Length: 459
Image: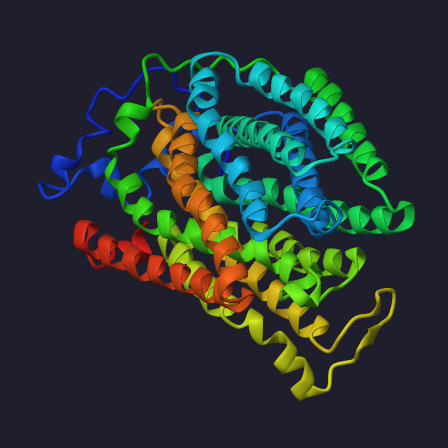
């Protein structure tokens, strides 16, 4: 999700959010001009740097909590004896909760004070991560994971919307890249610390105690530094933004890409950590952490740069290139053991211990996935931010971006869990990679059809 927007409080009076019936008609200046949103008068003034850093800290905390769960999922699966369908429900419960939370939270943020909504989500996060340390059943795990979905949705929408209101349009994707870099930095720290603490204490409570403490610190920092949000958008912005021509075009890619990212990011740690009898490599928790962190690290390092480049060079090209590359790399993940054996990769890695020849190739492939996605994410977020930044409701624009993601992210884990049990884990990565490539091709076709041959470089 992104973070940008301006503080306009009135709905756009000149038809920015026209219906789908205009797609085949005369071109609309707002939707087709390459950089309208980036050249608006006083938009170049940015907010207090301390508020940016408070929001980056909130992004950090959200990422820390999410990757902790991803890293420890194989341990939950092994400890609770969860089957493939239950694994799917672990992800689906999260995404269903997110889906239900998007519209009310985004509407509350645009209609009222985003700062207040963010503080409420942080407080809920404190309670959620305390509860994770005491989960003793698969039903309890799915229920608490659903609460985490509400927390993640609210924090994502509010932090990115507030960054958008503080940022200048000409630095929009760069600011988004920095906010995402904070999230990925947390993912690295969370992944490594979660695996190490679990291996050291042989339990979950110490891991989630650290996460809870981080949320308490973030809650205090946001309350102390972040100013009240005075931006108010009347009405129900979702109605008009949902048929915005640019958003409809982006949806043609994003709906399919959701399947790809959900499957690949969910099943890489499972492939690494689940016992070999169930199709995995059976690595210990810290080894899984290193593999997960490789994608976060490359994404973190690259996003500020790729965001800045997309601000200058056109964002839709970065969406296409990143999405297509992600799909191609994803299809190679199941071949990590074969690659490791062919190149003679070591079975023992310093600081990690005994693994297998697949370990280093899997680290490299997951890192390559991070590089590919770093081209897509800040550019995609900035494009959605542009459509809500002129008073149409930036939180609602991000909300639509999240809603588009939900069908794929809800259904993909169920399909992945069934494929894992019925066919094999390799097929999960083939499905994910194919969905990403198909989404990128569809995006180019729709972009050329509705916005012209030059749109890939102009947007």
